[in-house]
Image (tube, rainbow, N blue to C red; front, side, top):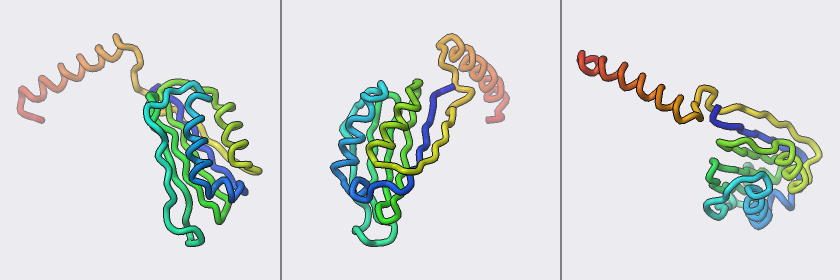
Length: 146
């Protein structure tokens, strides 16, 4: 397996927090260290559309060595979406608790996906797969079938 992908959707969240570029930035800035990840750049956060327009909100992401964390908010309807994707395990419950606290969520749902079910993490296993592919495709290419 490549790694876990947490998808969290929050409802009835604090409109003030969902509207705040600063709050989203600070949340994304602190999140990686909280769950044992390595931030490799500062968060990028911005409002999209004008407050009051249907569908307006704040979106942000932070790139981590292990993959990324992204947040999208819709303040007018109190909706919040979060993705935490990592190539290494992390404390899922801690990640959920932090988001619930940061956005004053009264209701939320989450899903956990295991990404890359067939992704080999073992270097010897990876070498064997690459070698087999090279042998397979080498024979095919030699016959002119690529």
